[in-house]
Image (cartoon, rainbow, N blue to C red; front, side, top):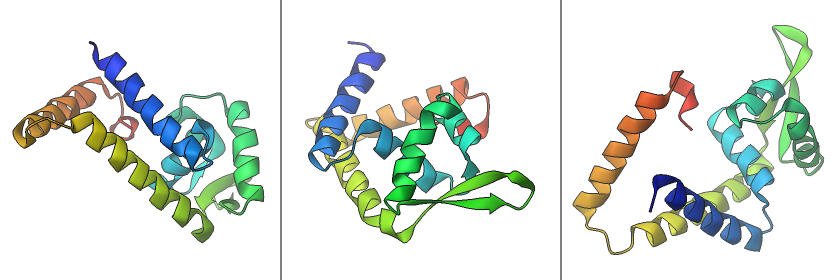
Length: 138
């Protein structure tokens, strides 16, 4: 079994749990990334998510219409809008954290704590080896 297989299986497990809460992958990814990087402009968020900016527009529009995301003027560039989560997004983020913990618990079930620590340390080192930029490892 490869690392890619495990990542795909964990993502599917998380997606299933998120769908049960009414959150599609596209929606939870935007919320999660903005929770970690408040104040990004849309093109930068698209780059972090490895999407074309136009692909992200609909999701951001919907999240804004629901009051979960707001666009604010960029003080350094009048043409840009910066993206921020609103207080209304907090319950969804808390649910996402709970779902992530449930998925992690399922994946790590039966593993010794020392093995989990070793795995996390090795994965962090691999991620650091592959990152072109410090903010890219997400």
